[in-house]
Length: 42
Image (cartoon, rainbow, N blue to C red):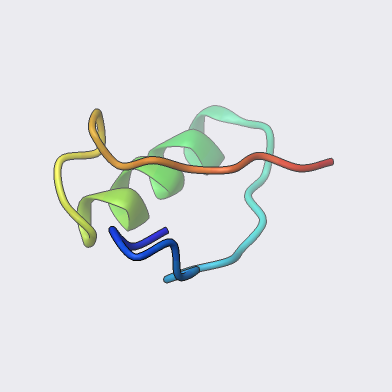
């Protein structure tokens, strides 16, 4: 989500080491992956 609360990305990942690596890579496009806020839904 952006600072204004807008969704900036929506995707699914595999629950594997490669999937988590992909998640971190995608989050890095929006800033420091440790600081990017995310919502997780099942």
